[in-house]
Length: 22
Image (cartoon, rainbow, N blue to C red; front, side):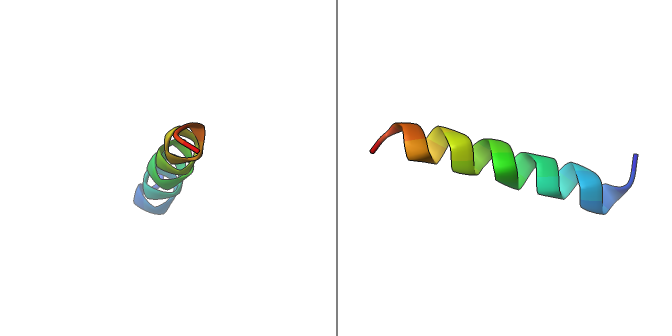
C-alpha cells in the first residue's frame, strides 16, 4: 500500500467522523 493511499484513507475516515458531529 502506498503512503499517499494510507494518508488519503485516514483523511477520508477523519472527514466521515467529523461529519457525524454535525
